[in-house]
Length: 493
Ligand code: HEC
Ligand code: HEC
Ligand SMILES: [Cu+2]
Image 1: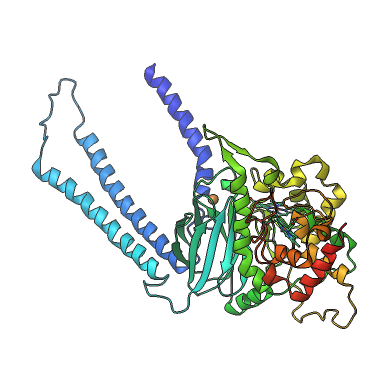
Image 2 (image 1 turned 135 degrees about the horizontal axis):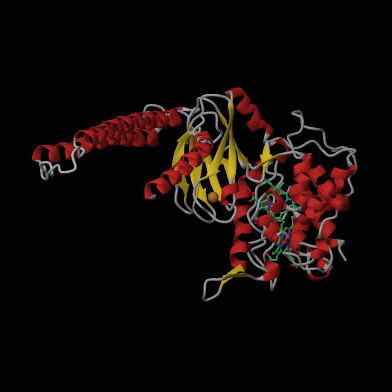
């Protein structure tokens, strides 16, 4: 009876295993986006080779051990019911030495090539040689997206890393909040991204393609959806991409939907998102701006004695967020989890949680938390239409209206919108992140207004946080634009 029951349990188990096997084995398919097989660069190839070597070594060990086991089971089984205990060989000196030494050899065989490779790859991707002209990248992790900076190139982007093929890429890894981990299975193993610690790793691609990356260290609610892409190009195509990142988008013409979206974006979204890092000074200042956003978030989060987090209500409307410069030129968004189309952008703007549970945009942006600001369907369409215009414009610089008379007040209003001032300041009396700006001219002189803009830390308005208004407007806004901006601010009654 006992035997019968257990054999039917065994059958059920076998059936379950047969059903599950395809699912389990599918994870090993070389074609899988996140499979480490079918590697696409020298580092991943070396690591794959080590894996295969260890695998076959393990197969040999398995066969030898199983063979000895099966042999013993049959050779020494009890054949007669009255058989006596066979001779016991406890403490056989030769055997004990043999099975102590054998694993040592196996472990040495694994350790030597593995450790050698770890040290080699620290120097460079190929044969432990120091590469001549590696591409430098700073990768910064945030909850729950990735920022990529090309130091010295005035290019900074998010969630999509572009690299040339056959060139070593030296990635400096950092984090603005918790510990994350940088992993592109087809290009290299994982390395942690630790706040304030400067881990460095190499990656290199040897073929053109798009490779999926994934944060590989549990980092909070949306960790599983913290992905990114590495897009590898022929060297010339890579240079073209880099140049395109430094070009302004084409001006919005005859597109009232996108035009309206631009204004809405300036008011509701530009607190957290930069869109103009195609300008060199803004690309250079973007890290600092991100840290300013992060500062306000940190200041506003308080912990009580039990460690429970609460927020100081109206303060938290900022958080470091992906810069959206040339967003429309990307393949995916929301940290690589969904294809970039106008429809999907609308879905995201309507309810980011629909696409990515736990993201901070839904959590913090006033448009989702203040019913007075909830977006209508029309406004969602306008915002999506505007976002779709964010891609590199034509190569020849478009002649701007240099000869045409420009109204300085209208120009100042443009500068106000373009620089995200409207996201933190209402033009009336309402407090947003910063003070409402109506009646500014009555309480401040032109010079004081200028100083508030170019050096916001000099005099901090009472009751408002310091270190939140970006400190780089003095350098990124031209003198002409600054004068127009001030003239415009002085008209606000
Ligand atoms: C409180 C700050 C905040 C505000 C305000 C905000 N966002 Fe976001 N946004 C974020 C954060 C944080 C993310 C990253 C979410 C993630 O992937 O986890 C994000 C992601 C995005 C993305 C995807 C970017 C990418 O590269 O994956 C788009 C598009 C976007 N936001 C559009 C908007 C629009 C449009 C508005 C205004 C209606 C807006 N955001 C307002 C914080 C904000
Ligand atoms: C990220 C939010 C943010 C952005 C963007 C921002 N500011 Fe501010 N601004 C603040 C905060 C907060 C204060 C109050 C603290 C201080 O004085 O630094 C402030 C203060 C000011 C003041 C002084 C107001 C007073 O009542 O004395 C002026 C003027 C001003 N900002 C203009 C601008 C202009 C113009 C822009 C765009 C070029 C801009 N700000 C962009 C947050 C912002
Ligand atoms: Cu992470």
